[in-house]
Image 1 (cartoon, helix red, strand yellow):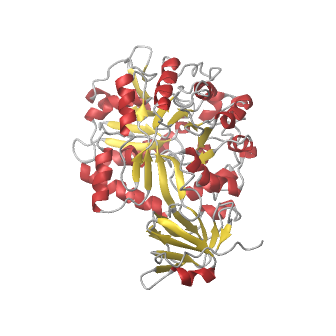
Image 2 (spheres, rainbow, N blue to C red):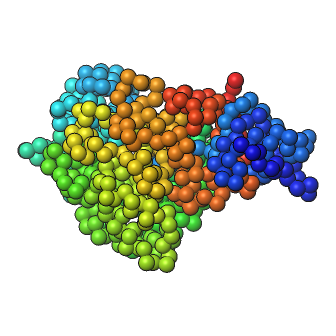
Image 3 (cartoon, helix red, strand yellow):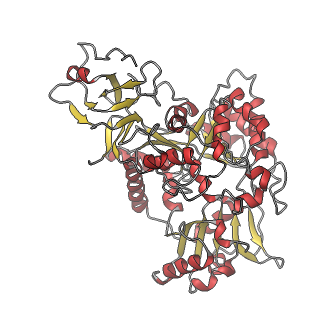
Length: 552
């Protein structure tokens, strides 16, 4: 490879704040794919060059960091995460390790015994597969709780299980009607089973459940963001703005220091919204801080396969899944168009094939609108999609946002709850990451934390392996959908920037771009995927600030 010319600053330019040297710099910049050193000034990349350039970039005040052969890439971004809301969702006992009902009951019993008087058992991360052939029902856990009220979030984030004491506290004694397709599941006699499907039903418990104090919430958020920086994340596309005080919370944190990650938040737009509500969502786009901003709006076209609320072209094995979350899908289309005309980007949760089709149809209707721009809209999750829809993503400029680590909730032999629900044919086209990339789509990758772990190294590895990293005995799920190492890295860097319109300042290592950088001990493109998942993080930098410095 012929080396590119060096990129020293002009003599009039002041010295860099930080120089990163001793690196193998994978820039993702077509103008200069490789380099050895990077200079950072005022939160931006000032220069990219070779080792011989370093002496020209520094003075006595410059910090020089030797990366000792690490691979430096554009900063890794989680394309779909819930860090602010997630610190409340991921409260109590982590049930993600439970594999059967006995383990679940044992974990709940332990949590109940540790409660103070009047306390609640709260838990999260419960896999639907734990219930096997049993319906989700409070009777399966009631005796383990010792009479304590309990609220248990299932892993999908769209359903929960409440026991009798919790239902009584919330005054839930029968079915309810909702503006969206949500339900309090009841038995034949009209008694609640405790299974609450979709957010409107789960929210019935919020007024009576314990909530963290403002100080605890702030401390937990900062701790989480620090953990995210330590595994290499420099930013996250946050798919919620669940509480009105979130902008105030983030501004308060920035009054005392810096956020370790760059956060881009998309408030929800739910069924039943009117013009005033849509205009309020437009106004929210003005809110921003140094490392956070409101950018876009999040919709839900459907729910989840396991909950029976994914919108499918044909019913699932229980005869469910044939309706959208919006009872009137045309109202969704109207809302998207209203926001698009105001220049607001949209992201739509669409898991089922019918939901994906309707979102694409909605965007296609905007094709002749001069105010519509490419990659202004994106679809989240896309768990199953037929071949005839793939080319539409690139043609319409709709970005695909997918979470490779979600395949851990399915099995290659289709014996899991998700696969059984959708059936063999649809399970055979699950999470079509490679097909979408090959069709020319922008593909941004994320974790959906706390639905799956936020570690981007696991996302990079699983995108290539189609099985959990470090577990070669597990058969890969639809292995033909594996990405290359470069595609996976692009999904957390350059394609993440394209999906939110930041490609002119993020996703590459080039002069003038934001100094959001990640250094790993191995090359995430060429190293074995299992090694990438466990690679030490040598450095994380966001906006020129070192947010994590590894050892060794």
